[in-house]
Length: 104
Image (cartoon, rainbow, N blue to C red; front, side):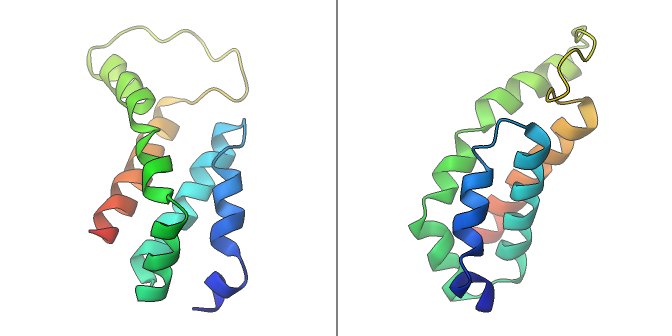
């Protein structure tokens, strides 16, 4: 796939480490899309870059956020522009789950 040859996976990997959650979420969405439409070349590239491990490492923090939402824990007002709101938490979680699902 041309996107793999162009280095898109490597670029998205760097964006997953961005300090802004909105950037991480969009990078994860792009990776999810690659996993959905990709072929064996794409899958091999995603696995060789340890993207599964990187994304799975984000699950504990998301799990805590989701648990707080489901248990109706009061989440402090958004003070930091980089903080995730409820919709972002759900979107981020969905992107990671879809990514993992499509590589299985």
